[in-house]
Length: 603
Image (cartoon, rainbow, N blue to C red; front, side):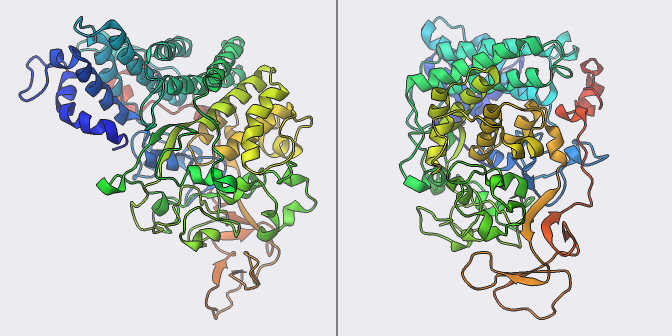
């Protein structure tokens, strides 16, 4: 249950609607007829409400980044594990919506598309005003654009179907259509949605509005433009010359939202504004565009506290050190410009940094607008593999690791992404101006407390970003926009497909590196309170002191230089990224049913 104000209405008619989506000869008893649904605005609204259930839920979003380059976890995900197909079950607690992104079962399913197409075919009643019908058709086409976008991201070429098919229809056993055809149809759908959705604003932030449709368009067009640009010599062969057209569509859509003026970057909680976005039980009226709204009074909650703090549940996602090093100093200079940054211990490396660092991972600088659990100020070594444990999404006034307790809102679209989409599209087009920078990246960094470089384009390419992340990028603005995107949207479900579109899947092969330890078999004070709190050992000291965690770095863990160095986790499991991994395989069961689909290259 994600959208409370609509779900109540939906329940009344769901049984009838699902029956209608199957072309049964006889209408089942106690179900609504097609005429009852499509002959009035209330029926159209109820049908459209049922489609909202397809959108990613709160638990989907907070877990998608389990498969990414910037996170270590309990095990190596199947997508990069040598000899293991991504159709192998990975984390069975995940829903069908995001199992592909998590490296689990591949879900080819098309039932949602049939529901959408059935609506579009039957929404023709003269008893409903034409502008009303077009509004609901716009909503349906929003869902179809989103649905197909997710399919293209995962599989590349897919069959384009724009009407409900009967079981005898030969198109059920047809081949896939070209990426170009499908993406052009997606663009037509989302353009129709933008033009025809009548809802301009929505205080609940749970309804699809014209702005939300524009946000989806900017997301789709940015993905496609960069995919065509960076895969022009491979998976997007023959499409590279159209990349700029898509990038311009992305910039235009984002710019329209910016000019419409319905949203702004939230700064109402001062230094804690970024953190407050992800702790509030209510949508943020300034920045949130479409959310999953929780309600603890009726049991609608999610599992962030549990999944991000339990040593036994989930995959124990935790950030890796190379990503932590991308957070800027508070003056706007790269942290990696500091002399000796490679061997700084935790208390040193977190000083005077981008405030989002303190609001994304546990540090002694963590503070909350709520009274709550002080354990969020230090990493829990029973959970974290690297020392950089997430604090984002964890509510400090709720139990940690004790089930489904979270009532904080989880965003599907927020305005910060729109600004990032605009900045990246313009940077890729080579048209980003100082004014563009100031109103996008500058605004986001200002909220994070950064003082330098807010209104001027970067002039020098950061060698750390080039050497560690993007060796083929020389444009300083593109590098900095990518830095900003990773930090601002961390743990919001974007990272894996950012790597895909940038053709940087090789980053998934990275060693999972954690905190720097100057010397094994020593006590360390990681929060600078004058008392040791952890002992990293290669030789078991035998006795234990109360209040100190003892971590064996000579077994499952190791130190990069033997008796000193960065914590290394799971280095014994090889990771391999291949060109074929940019697409998932079509499931074998579907190929057996319809061999004309063909398999993706390399699978």
